[in-house]
Image (cartoon, rainbow over all chains, first blue to last red; front, side, top):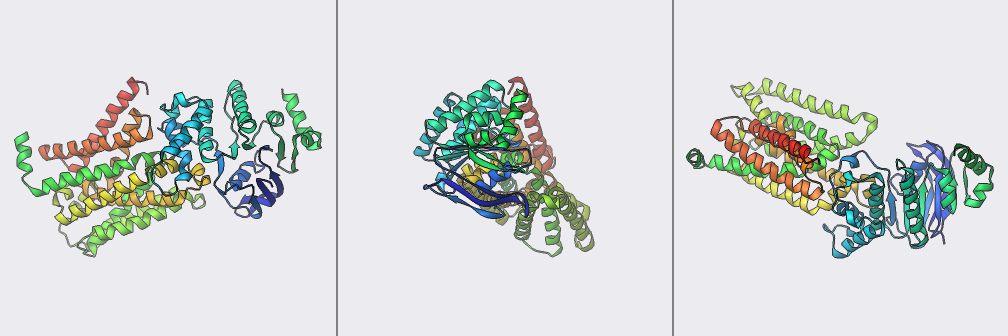
Length: 236
Length: 278
């Protein structure tokens, strides 16, 4: 059974549809890249999948024992965070928030989860450092570790490499690939970078005026995929 | 100097002033970090004006314990301002400016029209700048203040981790199932309580200083959320104590003296932060 299925999903704000009639589904262990032009509704789709805003119509069904709050989220950095005095450990631990429920403090088990997540992201040495003094790539690792604390099965990444230099970008992609391959975590990633999407993903969802959903292979053979990857090729 | 202080501390109202001052300073500094980081400072400022308007109405209506009137009014306005701030369609900041300036004007107007007191400008001045009110607190007001302070501190400690999560990344917290709106509401209500409390100490125009300065000073020096919060509380309590003692000895207005000490602490922290390159 699919982990996440969207049926006839129409997205938008205030009843103004941005994207109509989306249909796609994701199985456990898939690596889905969502590509499309600016303003095509990628971020809106992400917010809808996270239940941050309701869809105009259609449904999002979770399967495979996945619960609503078990989706890990790597948001784009906000302005607030750039000036935020918090240690890496505090931020990673805040990913365990949903496990606490109404209990006010974190228990030992949650601290262990945070520690493991930091080790996985290779940031345990930075645990007591201040978040705002880290490099862009390190900050992304911190937020990824936090997302891992919140969810074990599926991660939603919103432009995880924006603003990173090429070397760090490659490291970040490798890290995400390892999470997908070694830990079997389902990845849903929004990306501008069609070349990287085609390189790493197993499935592509292209949204915009023309929509496409299918495996990477199908995408590369479709006219839409050819047009987009062709453009990318010329740029390089 | 110590003899003078000793002499003053024979009077119960001086002791009350110190107790209340320390409690208020503690409470106001706790949420300062959150307010500064969430760009909520404007709500604090707007609410202090609302509290002034409410106080004017209370004194016109001759309500004996005006705290009991001001508190609910300010809490309701806090909830409203938070909603307005989140709703971009009706221009949140304009709504806040409207309410706060309106409350200020109406408050002054009411005081002028209906006041029974012979010295209106003196009353207004002490409400705005808290010149003498802290020295005229009754025992009941001290108790009310103490109880509310304990409640505020308890709420802050119990919800510390949630406040952190909501402050650092509201969308993430919401996606993980934390009820961010409920906590925003909690923060707004606690701010309202703090502002009403702090009005006794520094007057309604200077409250924001009490909330924001310790947080800003602490943020220059410390790196983790916990150390920033703790040091902001310590700095705020020490500054308030120093300010009250100085004002007793030098005969200066309590509120503005405390704020002056806070500013001095901020400048020193800024300097240290610059030198150590943090």
